Length: 136
View 1 (tube, rainbow, N blue to C red):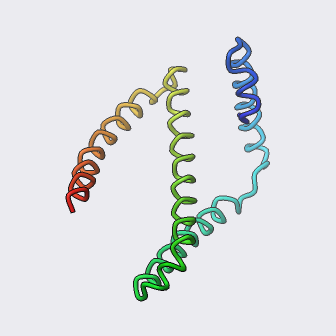
View 2: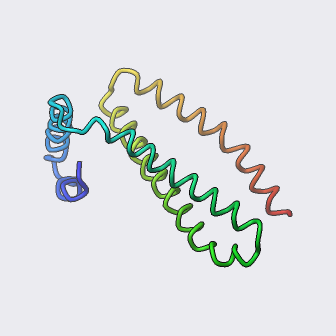
């Protein structure tokens, strides 16, 4: 649901009804062939190119310190773009999981449990690497 509709109906009783209508409409539009079949491969190629571009800029800047000063803003911009895109995708999926959990969708409780376990398993190595990098 677009943010404008969400903001308009979030604190009212109509939010659930509008949310269900919008999700039904989106699904029926997808079933009717409303989305382009080339969209997902194009996005994969686009973000793959962004990642490869960031790595190439980084490799080029490592060879020469003056090149690093010149390329640093571009490297930073590409990395920030990737982080923002991943954050948006993760937040969207977490919101979908919370919505499914509240609606008692079959499998949502198992999915929530799996996500929480993997999240806990990821935090420990991240903290170790982060704290170790602070020392050096």
